[in-house]
Length: 352
Image (cartoon, rainbow, N blue to C red; front, top):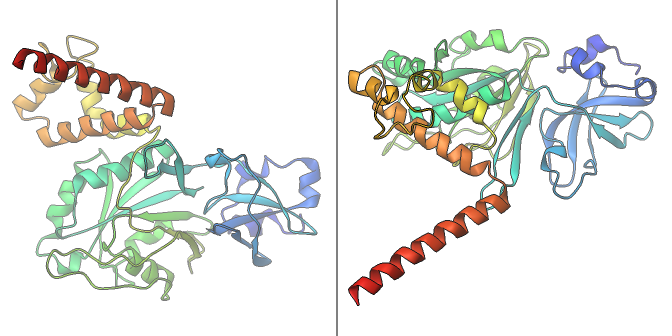
């Protein structure tokens, strides 16, 4: 490679990626970072050029083998034909919409996840917990960013609610339209660092992107006065260079975030519930009607929020179901369907 590792470091390159290169690749390949993933090609960036290259060839059902935004891939030094995808430090993914178990990749090689919500009716602890599980499972540090603090009567009430979701969670209340208002986020946007923004539509992600970047990268629209919800503006994931030397990845507002293979993230987020569960009388306690349940006792004592327990149960059940193989899921659903039919048939017999 003619380009120095120091130049590449400004794009997020590190020893983690350098160590993956063979002797031949050190001289015959060029590492580039994916800034946008299209259906028919990849926009890539390098200290010396930026261009669009063809998609990497992958197996038909190898979703995680496809390049996504933030990935590093190797190009042939002369032809710039894509050669291979480098191993990732981190990977955000979710279950795609639909009945199968297909994986949808969100972003790769992110250092910090900015989980964006707002100080109004859009603030939703359950939604924030989903993003926090996503971050913790990927091994990425999450920071909750509460926008529109300048429009709220008491933004600190939202901050306190968010801080309760996870021990040590960093929460920033900001005015996303002001350069001074977003200054608290700049420590995570240093040279070569990659931050990703996630959140529902209308919480001010596009405004925040434009303010951090210092230019109008994304279109913005106002919120609806009727319900304080914003209008969706971002339509795709894209990686942008910041004047601080960092990289900012914006994502569309996600109407649905189905967890997949995120057991570690759920356990990390709900450490308090899992620790209580170790004190239950039965190891397979469902925390409902079993005697000697420490979790239910904590709810009754007022030391565990019953709403938090309810959200915990929902995420655990969802993650377990989504992580089943498609064959196992179909067998489970088929067995459940047979049970329902048998019950209905028995009841009909009694009526007759």
